[in-house]
Length: 242
Image (cartoon, rainbow, N blue to C red; front, side):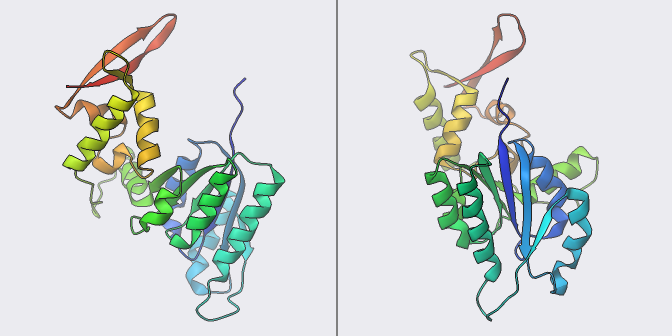
């Protein structure tokens, strides 16, 4: 029996809009079971009113944190202290840190040093230091865009997709080469894992593709091969540099 990954989901309520809640929670379940779900903020402030309406239906526990001093973010401090308490409790296997704030960079680094899997979720404005401190970083705008697409909703607020640049091609080609066998073929799952280690915010959806396979298939620099597995219905996908 495969061990289920238990995740602690900690949300910076002052920094993340409530409109992303549906897409965010659906994305998190791809990586494990959110056994702890907390959101931090000063709930006496009007800007958190929209969050109050979605907390119960998503079973998220609101943590009250008053702003004691002007200019200091008490919410960040409370979230960091709770994260360390959860880490030492040894009740979870990983963390989802939901924020676009670089103040959580050191926290993500510390959690990974302790052997935790760390997923970052935030808006595209998130600074690079926080992104690279996570094992994987997911952009909320992309999640919202793809949920609308799957639901058949026309997206009037077009999300700007990343362009596949020569730098992107170099990252893909080098990752294929690093994971390849003597014949140059690399299992796509291994390639994907290697890419994330090099660039945690890499996601095929950022470029307009649902998965990594169609992204590679769209590029003339690579060839794709699907291989049968004995006694299994699905095929393994391999990729090679041309």
